[in-house]
Length: 336
Image (cartoon, rainbow, N blue to C red):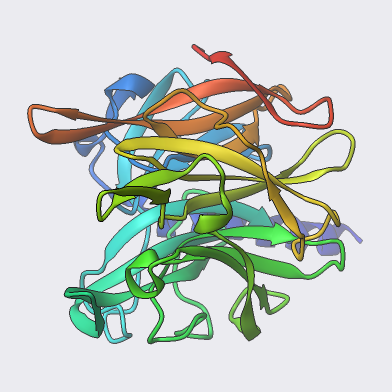
């Protein structure tokens, strides 16, 4: 028994060391790191994983980089954690948008949108559409590195998709929920597709959940008329304390980036999804996600979206949220 326990501890120790050695957080020169407050980071589509085993927060988003923090106040980084296959459809240097981190069954998964600008899949109304798709990488550690799994393609190659997120539905099966981009269908949708049990690929075909045109608050001017906006962006799922299934997602009111919420009448991904009549965040805030702090407080991470001297500035922010009732309530901005 003594020798058996020794081997167990030895194996666990090797696993921990291997995880750290393989991670960019340990491999890079410390001089490259910097520690900064949240509002000094320029980042679109922020996503924060509160990791209980390490008692750390890990933040990623558009750009494929990662920051870490012990208290949400000061963040160390950025670190490059996404390691794609240069021989896959993504090419040697894909663009990375809207990355998310999810812990599931003793692994950590990196949901992100990858774009290969060298590949053109369609031209619609004069817009050339590049190869872009939601995809999933995996790691043994929250700090990465995140690498490809079995399947190179989760969604159809001729269909531009983005902003994939993760949800386990009431049937116990894992799903990716993603946007079918408006550039091709001119009325963006949010859809779901079943994933394999280890998330290494998809199962079957995607299913429509709702269209952008079904939203009452999302509007744009087209051909001189006000019509429903065509953009769907950044879905993220949650349940209230009463068990109600909701989804926050983002679109536009004319030129104002705006986030709203929809609720499923069935309590499952299949819906039907009913849109709330009004947005839930201030103007020019969006692409939100929800997480609980290590102390159990619910927060929403979003980015502000504004133009300064012709340049878009996107900075992550935190808002307090209340899920204790039947609906998500967004409170004041949270300053850790």
